[in-house]
Image 1 (cartoon, rainbow, N blue to C red):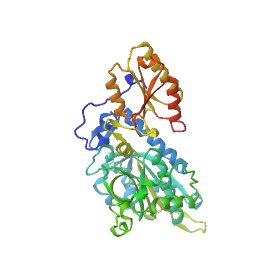
Image 2 (tube, helix red, strand yellow):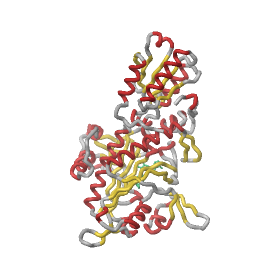
Image 3 (spheres, helix red, strand yellow):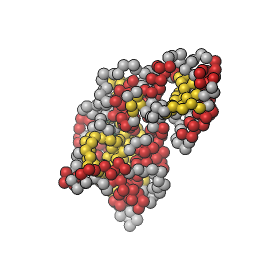
Image 4 (cartoon, helix red, strand yellow):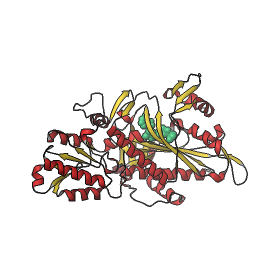
Length: 450
Ligand code: P5A
């Protein structure tokens, strides 16, 4: 993409309404525009990151054997009256009446709708286990929408629902989700720690939240610092293997790590004192096992191998896809702007032309642009007729992890400059080698975007 043809409305001033760094940088980098409290348009740069996160979530869900689909944002209130949650959900639910005077709502989550789909089409244990998911906009009329996309009213969520014959099978689904979430968040360059939590309006006893540690996090968390040493890495997991999934679950959840709702001082006191941590975290995902709560209320049953008809065991699992954009920035930035991890960056590298209009510099930039594009990667070429300082400031703000700087002086010596956004280190090298380095950095990584 050439910057002169792109829509990147960066702001020079720091917007006064933004209280946290991710919100400030998302507004300044032209990623989002607020349309109403907690409701945002995703401008082109923000939309690219959102799509990258969505792609990673899809890939990891499909890898775990879960089946993608799409349910609507608007729901009929009838199903919620059946489950008993229409009244219980309270003022967070946006209730709408259609022209026929029917009660509708903008879905805050989809347990009821998926249970209805299941009961309409599945009647035998032979179709189980089954996990269906979608990635769709949700609406919760939050009392205090704030921190930009981190606590929005309209937000993008991946929500998945498992259906199993027995409690044991459903607990395997729980563990499988935990494992796939560890992998998903690591691919995004994040450490998200599973912590024992409270289930709130979703229900059930077993639930873990995934928290990214950050000073601006809304949740207070208590943990044994040993949990931050755990890395999922590139383990080869067989998601059907119950023992293997249970082993990873055990490894990642046996140390003390809890949100304030479930915190237990007496248990925490058993953690060696030098490893006890009290901090703040951003909740980027949550998994639940709630047994037969919805299948009992809504009659979602299957015939078991013994011919008996039994309610299915269920759980649900969510990832806050739009919240993650803010969470990644909270975890990865400096005083000049965002620093995108390679796995989620909107463009793979920037190309800065120090002397637009100089025939040699223009040709060298175009050639770099073509070579990097031919690799299947997306460069952002700043081809505007602007001062070098302004171009660097824009690149730093929008946070592309690598920048190639091209100027007549370097070209005389046959070199361009390759700069790492995270370390600030630069090296001079011939253009062909710069392209080879970019190819090497992104080898084996998901590279497609929009
Ligand atoms: C699990 C999926 C559920 O709704 N039902 C279906 C279950 N869980 S949850 O924890 O309530 O939400 C899942 C994730 O969505 C994100 N999230 C939000 N993101 C932005 N703004 C909000 N107002 C908001 N509310 C929830 C969180 O990341 C949460 O973990």
